[in-house]
Image (cartoon, rainbow over all chains, first blue to last red):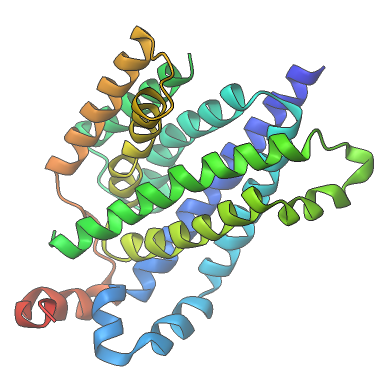
Length: 126
Length: 146
């Protein structure tokens, strides 16, 4: 039963953090290069533009859900299962989501990177 | 990629790995949280390790947002995964834990993944709205030195 709780926490973390990553990435692309914007118009303009972006706010909401799912998961299950399983799966789901929702050019190099890192994270926890 | 941008990626890496390990330690101190006492999860932030962990994760968030403003999601995520390698090396050389062969292979895989992705371009999709800033930034190298 504890195992079922742990895996439902992992599923919730992966789903929420992938949604959050995609929304935040889209928001920051809409804001534009933060370094350049800061030098051009100052910190307050950067903050205002980021905080007023709807994608940013939705992304933060999704990340909050992912964060509390992680806290629940860590108190129910073993950190050596929850953390690497959710982190590892998120690398792969993010590559898929970035390709379809953000139209990033996920070439073989990036697929290799995502799969290698996902595999490496699993081995580190073994 | 400028030196400053690599510094931002290093900030993402360090804050995430140290912050996560502090959170993990703190939640172990807090103990198991029951579904019947949901308020306990909010009170968990009163634990010092959880509190410092959250501060570091805020630093992670700021640098992560900065990185995402000039690089792809599929670039930033693998490029900052060296944090896992860092945590294992700390465990080996600082905490004197035994690192098994499978963990060394894991380190090799992650490092290879980071190598793969950082050889390619950081940004592949150029949204039209962000273009003026990007162009301005790249054509004014003198301002980058400030």
